[in-house]
Image 1 (tube, rainbow, N blue to C red):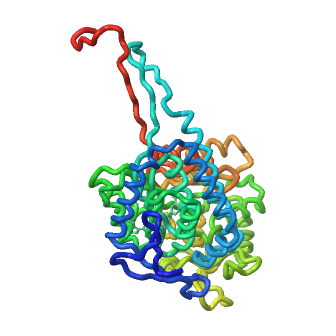
Image 2: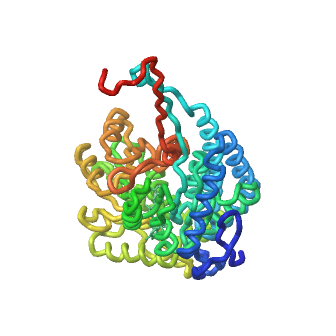
Image 3: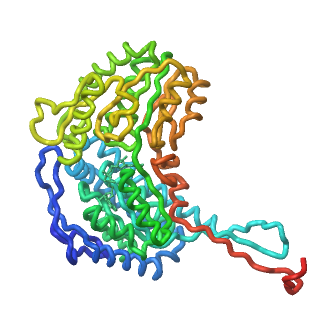
Length: 490
Ligand code: NAD
């Protein structure tokens, strides 16, 4: 990778002023690529290029044309699927099978929104009965304009796809700022765009730091819509910046999701879902079920099996055969997670983990960690750790479980496990979260809406709701009465 790592107006360019930064392999701590960081001026150029592209042609194209472009992007990524998965492992640290699934999901996301772009042509200009025969009204779905898209590092290519695919399907243009920790697959998306001949300026990619490139994008007056995924504190800053000129905004933020396990479950099956819920993707998942609520009766047996199974998880570099858990994403994140663990130690017994595995002296590895009965006022129980730390509490009754689960400023997701399906459905309906899982945990689907209640976010991505994010509704109402209009007569 050379230094021309900004993709602006269809060209690879070096920054006007921005600084350099490195992409680090979290399994070794070694630099794998030198990148240039976009500065304020580069972001400005990218936004202006996106505006020109929007007004020149992209905003006026038919959905069917945009569908062909999205399919071409998907085809291009598919041809390099394995290469992209390996790149994602080296940049982010996740085990190869997880990276392969992410890349396949990202490709699927482009294909899904290609179909919705086509359907948009059929939905365009549908008549609406306004209850007065003298007026005809039609409804248009118009692209929202220039979008600023800021994404995190935990699913780099997939997060990019979830923003870029619906925006392009809607006829919007994009300025995408990937995380400074994992920019490489976003640059590959830029390469795919240039290879398929996407018109210049339709997709611009500005790697760089949040405080500089991210903040410049969030406050840029030329951006019509901001779509942000990341932490609550940064989301709050982005929302403040958007408030200055009333930008349309959607926020996908953090979580501290609860998983409630009733005493009628099959323990082995429950343990598998609990492990998947907290340790998948290195525990770096916004919807990780990091608060486990177990009914008193089965708690001793379930916890014994859970701890055994957590100790059996194979940790190592993501490209090593059979590895289930890779490193955390960066040195900074490693320090943050270890800091939260150390701060939690006096507060609750540690059932397992909390340390670096002995056989992995370098890289950002931490053993799967489980705390027992932290105080419900402690940061361990209330704050997002975002890294393989599970906290367990026991409960007696359904009402107590629901109250504990909902006692959080977050509301991204939650799960319930019980063989009593009526009870499970009742609890799922009572959970104050954007997603409730029954007898499973963290599956996400391109077709289903994704987003949070409370401080976990505003708006929904994915499914047809993800497309609506990038559309502006418009009514075109026409007077077609026989009589000349007299404003003072009925
Ligand atoms: P983060 O908030 O630190 O950064 C997210 C993005 O914002 C990065 O690209 C960063 O460079 C940029 N940024 C930082 N400061 C900025 C500023 N002042 N203005 C504009 N942009 C700025 O989050 P992270 O550590 O990259 O990701 C982890 C967080 O993301 C967790 O809280 C996780 O729960 C959340 N997340 C949420 C979802 C979801 O769908 N709800 C999905 C993935 C991750």
